[in-house]
Length: 115
Image (tube, rainbow, N blue to C red):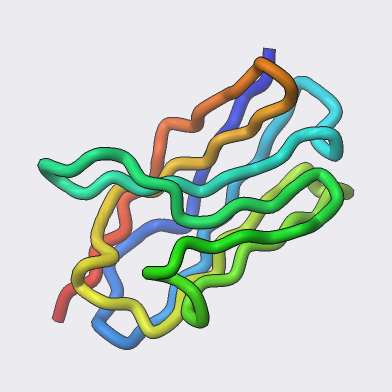
């Protein structure tokens, strides 16, 4: 069983930055692709960014140029660095680890962008 735990959320002003962390334990972290999703109130959960087991990254258009996903296999951790934050980035951010047919969600961390 893989456990996924996010941290780093909080309140930030528009234009500010924040770094989320996600630690995965219980398996070989390096073989997992890792995703960041988010869910705003009243909206469906949506993919934000992904990093493959090999380190390749992919971003949704609405965060390209503002967010950076990275992973540190030695620390079993994936990061999401968010800059130029907008009020519409307000959401609960979730980490998702997947390998083959298996996938594991974290409990989420709240990000609020407001002045």
